[in-house]
Length: 98
Length: 473
Image (cartoon, rainbow over all chains, first blue to last red; front, top):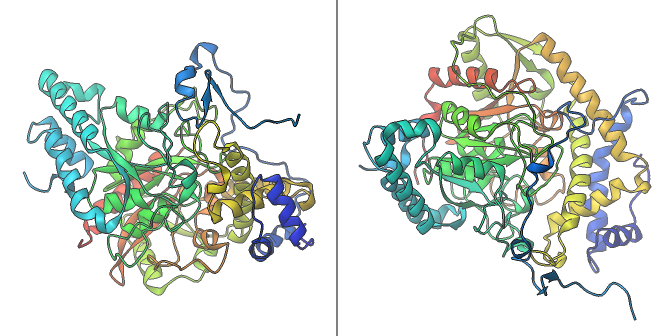
């Protein structure tokens, strides 16, 4: 599982996937990640071929709720922390180039 | 009256009910303690003095108008408390100790603080933590490190370090923390107070700034076991805003006669084989003797090696962190992603990595091993009623203790992670001092068996005076 050693390129790819800029610090992350990944190798010792995954521990299934219970913020409340509210909307950077 | 801030919750309630003092006196006493000590301890990020006093005045008016009967509907009326800064409090700055949320004013209330507010509790302010709860010491706060009230050269533990330090130094009557793996019990132990981590799904996560959504559990940090039971009763229970909360009714904790006679308490061998400081080991073994003298049968049991749980926890937690922190873009609230500190970056990126195909099924493998860990506990609980163990391998550390390794938090939390990934409830209660610093012993129970843990902890507390030890500030 963890035989693949982490490389500088992989750190860059993860940074891109995570929408983070870590330029200049890649080496540091390589060391930190390798250290952590080393600790994860123990999982390979266990045979889990016949074991199901646990995604949540409460045993609840198919939880529904009445629509009348759903709360929603007013537009003013939702925008109260926005850096650049614009005509009752959030202003974002352009997604497409012209 | 002097030193009202030093009262525990039940004592404070009694004083308010019988008119010995008013909520304003009690609240002012806590605010004065904050003014006096918090320059040194640095437990609080935000103190809302004026608003707290207004809430207290309102409480006093209600008590005056309706008398003690009002406490039936508002069981915490007039009681000042401190809350970890990752609980959304409407109109009150909520930062999760992170630069990215340094200016965030929530437009809505978390279920926990909402329920406490409805019960009449008075919010004093918001407490420091490791940013986004990533850490075990408060050193990862983007703002400052909280000091341990027992020795200000040491850390209080974390991530709910501000809340634990505030309770230990009597700057509040009780506090609220949250735990993903150890974040209530670790600082409570190092600060010599009672910390209760309920079963996952017992207390709503709605409005709590998420760390790892499949293990996050809010809970009380208090001066006694009874206080923890009292607060838990109020915050626990089904919440339509958190689909993972359980429908199971919330019992009246500690209301039945209880004896340890005939009780079987398991002592997991693997937890005691770890490298544990001698003083800590001795205190915990002494505690086990006390439980034995109270009538419990102590049974050595074998659990899966905790190393597996640490690996599972690392993968699951990082994965969930990367997903939860993906929403921070600085557009709708907060600052942009450049504001993330090193620890958050590390966790987000490792999470992205473990959820990515390159690590061929790491997340799925971890979720499978998690099933094995849960089964292991279920098997153990067929033989014993609960488990006893140390909560930490050492007393409170000095700052910088974990800088060398990115696994610091996990190594410190080795004794709590198996229970955390399984969702189990657990408590830490003070069990004496080592090198003049507090040691805690943990009791771990079956899912939703909070009452068993509280009952055993209370019997232990009744038998000892450890919870009465206070730091000299």
